[in-house]
Length: 264
Image 1 (tube, rainbow, N blue to C red):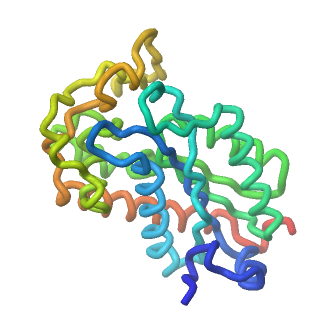
Image 2 (cartoon, one colour):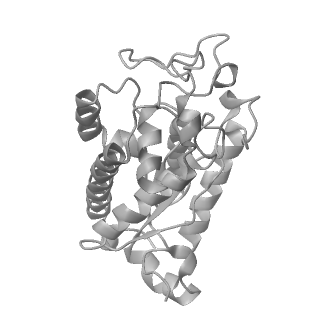
Image 3 (cartoon, helix red, strand yellow):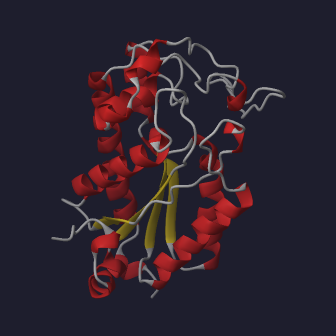
C-alpha cells in the first residue's frame, strides 16, 4: 500500500489533490566518503530518515509529504578520497531550483528544502531565494541540525561532543548506529581517527565561515573528530530531538502560509 507521506509512491491524481494544500519536503544530501567506518550515503540517508519521521509527526496537524531526495551535493572538499560523487556548486543550485520548479508545476505552493550535508547549506538558501523570486511559492531552506540546534547543542554539551555536526565523527557515527548499525564498520573505529587536518568549516566560536589554505578533508582520515565513543543510544537521543524540532518547524512553516492566501 502506498504511503500517504511519500510523493514517489503516489499517483498523479493523488498529487493533484494533495499538492495545493500541503507542504512538500525536499531532502538534500551527498554521496561522499565518511571516514573508514561509515558508508557513503550517511548525509542523504540521515536526512531522509529525519524528513520521513518529522513529516509523519507533523502530519497529525498539517498535510505534509516528502519528495525523493537529491542524493548528490557539493562535495569537492572530500576529493581525492574515493567514493565522492560531487556536483559543482552552481550545478547543485540549478538542480535544486529546477526540482522546486517541478514541484510548483505539480501544484505545491509550500516547499521546505531540508539539508543533511553541511557544504550544501549556503547553496540551498540561494536556490530557495531564486525560487521565491521567480514563482509565487513559499520556500524554506535549512539544515536539520540548524533547526534542532538548541536541543542538539544541549545534548552535545552533556556528552562533551567536539564537533556538531562535524563529518564522520561522533555525531554522525552515533546517528548511523541508531539508524543503520549494519553499515558501520566497527573494526575501523579502532584506528587513529582523532582530529583530521581537514576541518574546513569555521570553528564554532567564530561568526564567519573560515576556509583555510591547505586543509581539506581528503588530506587526512576523513573525520573531523574521533568517532570511537559514539553509541546507538546517543544517536537515538540526537535523532529524537532532531525529529521533534523539524516536525515543529514544518507545522509552523505551513501555518504561516495558509492555502487561501497563496496565488494559484
